[in-house]
Length: 546
Image: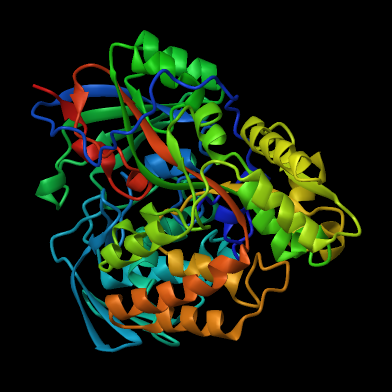
């Protein structure tokens, strides 16, 4: 999982997304029609383009160092510059990247064979030492690697030949290839990193990678430019567009207006509030699957939300369809569990996983009578609950307001408390802070399909966000079997068996998954419409329609 927004290397910030970053999107009336046509890839480009100006939603990146990037805006840029041994594909599957193949002499050992024809932008050849050095940065707590926690199963990463890298795990891990496909697994040139020191990935220190684009002019406050790499190794991803200039725009209304006026040629993550206007613009608005999710997580082990009947009742009472229509502009779907279904899509056993997800009980429309009965059964001595959101986050406020209304209907007294970033962050590490909060409005996304590891943060007794003390040995065992299985189908069956156990516990109150929203001006095409772009070199496919 990954929406890495801020600091701590040991924290999977996907879970802290609402907590640490406010989304400025305001709730809007439902669009005239619900976006239901989902696209994986836009039509293939057949012509070249000299330059494109692309919009980034949010602040300008402060770093492009692959192990430090943590926002959608940063990922949007770096995914075209730096690449790893494995690569996420537009359909969210994982395929080979800088590795032309790999061997697995034992379930715990992977030997990656690096392509011999790869060069950094400065013309120097990629070596196994560069790869091992880059990956080992995630194992160094001093590096500040925001996804370093994902490498906990890794015992060692070594260059075992000029073009061979051996990754040794403490036990088999079904997520490891997906982990290596994320930007934390992207390769930088060792000498460049060591020469730049703390400035690596900044305007002062530059960047040195192997991707289809190389970093061009970057002056803080004036946007970021990337230019086509004429010596790129992968001829299937030879760029159609020579230069791309990224403009970061914080205000959603400004972003929408710039797309409509033609000041921007395209953007991912366009504001839900702009869906109606953009759908009527001269360009094309595409919708694609994503792993973006919204949910409410219980954080107090002794409050009302620690009672499973209260969580079940809130799940039944929440008007999830209203959230999708009114807040997401129709670009989403109610969610049945804490894992968004697109996270399963690229798995070799996706058919079984998605079928099991489809069979989970859903309640897009509220069932107030059933929810009220559960609250009566719980016989609470205190019916007051506090929902924490990040101050200024209008999307979280809209979700919390709907939850508050649902709670009122079933006999609960729910208060919304807007907290500052530091206060929200404190909830994750200070049990005393959690005593005053019952539910945390949470959103995030997965950069790669690591739903197994993500599930563990809720299910395992020591899981990062298992604040209510959930401990079911059968569920833990099934998840461990899924994570350590070497056969994808076996892993899927173990996961499904475990899902049948933890689903009934409602470790979260799931709300919705959000579709990706891509806007392209007339004449541009080629790029993925799914959220896989945060790890895939999408810009290499961007070109003209003729």
